[in-house]
Image (tube, rainbow, N blue to C red; front, side, top):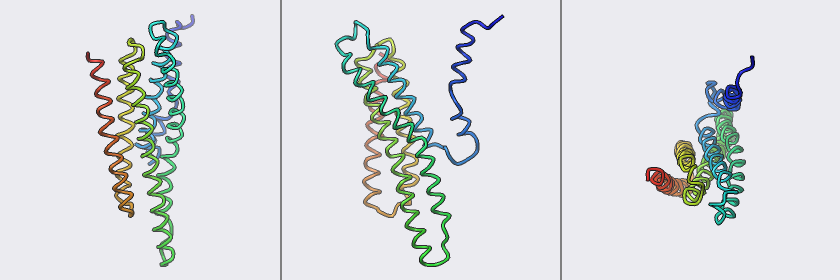
Length: 215
């Protein structure tokens, strides 16, 4: 006797998760927190797309359908970029390790190594900084969906907002860690200011979505 369809559905859902969690738990340095932050952004954008799909085609939301359709397209684009950033974060970490492994016997080697370390560290800042920015973009769209999307999916919007905020804050930790080793202080100050602004604004946006759910 075959299993009921609901059991097949549960098994399919469980198996659809993939092996990303296993890769994270494997005990290797990468993928690590930066890649997980980008993945949170992917999940946030995916929830946003789901809410868009649950809104489009409903008579009650016909007036906002054009805007919701555009939001869904933007979220699809952001999803693809965040997927790429999962891998780019792991690669940027490996680049830093490779730079520190360069020989440092002669003065010339030391100078080259120092230069390559700074280049690699800048990459290790730029990738999570973009992850945070893309997560912030997702959060802004989700905040808009909280106002115009299908009200029956408001709790899903709220989960998406929290995941987007996690993507931003999670990425910021990698920004801070690598920023301390950057020698260009002007770049450091500018990046700190941008990151702090995103964190503060993201907190406000996520709180606004949560308040709508609680009401």
